[in-house]
Image (tube, rainbow, N blue to C red; front, side, top):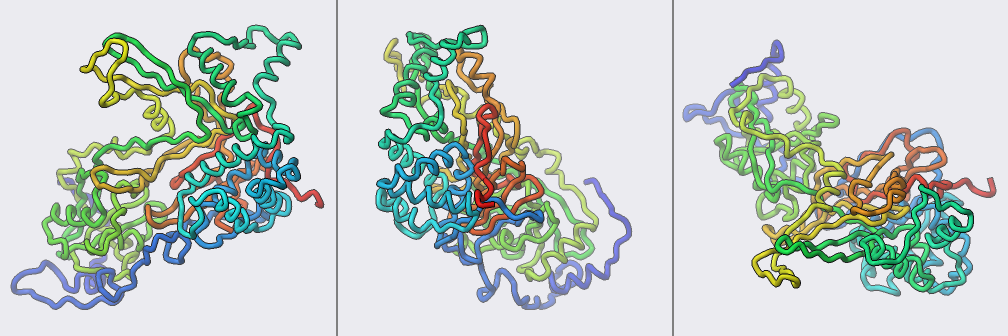
Amino acid sequence: MIDYTSGAEDWSKFRELSKHVFGKFGPKTLDDEVPQPKLTGSVDEPNAPQPKLTGSVDEPSAPQPKLPDPVNEPSALGGVLNIGNTCYLGAAIQTLANVSELSDFLLTNEQRFSHVPMVRKYAQMLRTLLERKETASPQELKEAISATSTLFVDNVQHDSQEFLQFFLDALHESLKKVPEAKRQVRSEEMEEKKAAVEGEGGAEHVAVHDGDGMWQNAHNQWKKEVLSAKEGSTVLDLFAGQFLSKLHCPNCAHSSNTFELFTMLQLQIPVPESIWILFKAIRSDINSTVVRYAMRIPMTTELVSIKQLICDRIGITTGGGHIIIQNKSDRKYNADVSRMFNAKKEEAESDCTLMGMSLHDIEIWCFEAESVSADYGDRIIEIYSESLFSDDSSLAEADWSDVRLLSIDACLKDFTSEEQIDGSHCDNCKSSSTKLAKQLSFTRLPGILVICFKRFIFVPSLGRFSKQGVPVSFPLDNFDPSPYFAPDVPQQFLDNSRYFCIGIVTHHGQLNYGHYCSYVRDLSSNKWIFCNDSKTLLMDSVPNTRDAYIVFYQRRADVRTSTVRRDPQG
């Protein structure tokens, strides 16, 4: 083992701390049975306060995101009142409100929607949020939505992505029934006619004709579903994209194409089935060094089981070890996450697995002690972070490439990669031994590209849903998804595919509890606004994207004016 030292040590502070942590000095022997003191506030005591995990994200016990530093300017956007487990709705509405083309269209045509309660109530909320910059209650909008669907009738927590997808679909169906409300965005057909009249059919302009090729078929489908006056709406004009689903037979090379619309792109987070974790262990011998270990475990391992695996690895009983979690950001003790690791098996939350944690954000310590008072968490970390430590041989075996920070490009590569379809066969060659290959690619991307990272997924090995807590990096500016277009797509579509981020919905917590917030970009000042229910803060920094769940991108060619506007009254 390689030994490292950090200079001279004051062993008196270790002895003082040892009285509270281990209840003794030195190694435990048969001749040295010292009674363990009862530590008040211990997380393992039956009477110790425990987090109330009820599934409500709005209770004081729910984890709250760290507030950003505000600037000395008033926020240019109103907040959304939380009327009881409605942060999923508020975060989605505040982000959607920053899509200026949609908000301007609804406010301009507000009187035309007087007979459509849901659209009318949403327009009223927009006027409160954007013009008066006041806190808006979602009560009437929620009631109007509940009148059309039972999905959101109750007062329990819901998935913000599920609500946003439902709301966009409902807006589309409502708007296409109001033909007298002119669509705000000029259709592609109008652009082509304008180009033909003005003689702009040069090398840079690609005329699209009906035909039998892949691109022609994609365009025909697009005209039918999006550009037609009967089926189209402003929602589709702004949010609709199209992808190609191609089935290919490796045996006879026959292929078939299907074109599908989307208004929200849902991306899997490609994580390995198992992962290496690093932890530091301290035995009860006060003269021993801190030892760093590496261990590979399945991503679906529950946190309480990780404690058992760690204790087994260092040779102590599960009841004789205690896990302390340290934040990497501020180097402080994380009491909430520590409780999850140390919970008793029968009391642990079933959704608290390794896949729900971000190992990029925490460090794991294991102390040979039955319990540790929460009051001493920071003190323990402060002292032992500077102590002697050595590396176990397991560190030489570890491959840390699988814990690197994932990117949105990794998610898109996974989305567009070829996969074998189980149980499939080719109708052309009738081969039953060959599986068909399926591959997705884009034929069109929308002006407003909404991407959802699929964090809440069903895990077959667990037989239930769990949350993916792995952070995914993505650019706030100059996002280019053009490498994922299908072949034969005209170059003008590839050239016009640069995006910048205008909003982010975040989820902080686990599957059954947590909190939704959002970040909204004020395009007039290029500053970000942090939205936490009714509280909005104008930030002097970029958003913390670790907990990003839904990302709103706007195409650069479609930039107009910011939805976050000044009061017309001054």
